[in-house]
Amino acid sequence: MDIAIAGLCKSFHAGRRVCKALDRIDLRIASGEMVALIGSSGSGKSTLMRHINGLCVGDAGQIAVGGRSIQDKGRLARDVSDVRAGIGMIFQQFNLVGRLSVLTNVLAGTIHHLPLWRSCLMRFTRAERMIALEALARVGMAEQALQRASTLSGGQQQRAAIARTLVQRAHVVLGDEPIASLDPDSARKVMDALARINREDGTTVVVSLHQVDYALSYCPRTIALRAGSVAYDGPSTQLSHERLAQIYGSDLPDLLAPRDSGATDTPRPTLALTPAAVA
Ligand SMILES: Nc1ncnc2c1ncn2[C@@H]1O[C@H](COP(=O)(O)OP(=O)(O)O)[C@@H](O)[C@H]1O
Ligand SMILES: [Mg+2]
Image (tube, rainbow, N blue to C red; front, side, top):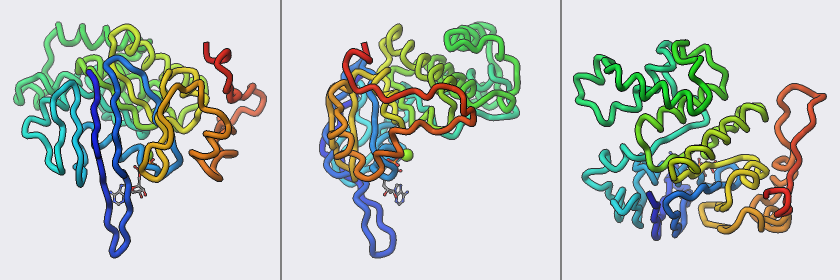
């Protein structure tokens, strides 16, 4: 499904201070694209994602997903929960229920489609369990299906969250910094899983990323926000150092150094800015 955003504005008021979190955002993301959303902390990435799935209402502008309105001029669409059922969300802080099994967490993705009494009871049919197991297998997590979610590593939890969007039959997946707190190896597995559902199912994926090198390796298109406005929107391969410096300002050196995963002897991934390195 495609995402269409026109004239989206959002301000937050804190006392007498007004923060323009989103300032006239116009974006079109076609069905089946895999797009990176970058920008320094506070640039509006999370706020934009929260508007796309209707968790947050703008002051002005429109958003439609798959041709159906999410919100229009500051009002949520009346059937927003129906439209939202097709949008999967993955957060930086893992949003699984720790005391439940991985399989049950993934089955929770079917809840949009279930009558309320069945979702309250957490009763699932054999067919539903099979679908959830298949989804876990696709993200390389079949073996962990019966483990408690709290026993999973961060990267495994994120892959389980991706499996949940598969069970949900989401046509759009929004990932809000899903790899921000992961080591490079786990981060790569999570990005591989997102790339796979994008490639094989045609799922539209929008993922906000702290590290630009992941945007380059996984996402043909990058959208950069700066202070609530679109500062760059184009091929990831054309993000030159100069452009990145404009987008990030003084945060740039920090961004180029991948976060330390604790191991000092592992080679650090380097930022590759040439098209050849992306191919
Ligand atoms: N609920 C809120 N109340 C007040 N200000 C907010 C709220 N949510 C976000 N903001 C502000 O909006 C701006 C964008 O925030 P956010 O979307 O979280 O940025 P990012 O995800 O890029 O780090 C920031 O200045 C932030 O302080
Ligand atoms: Mg954020």
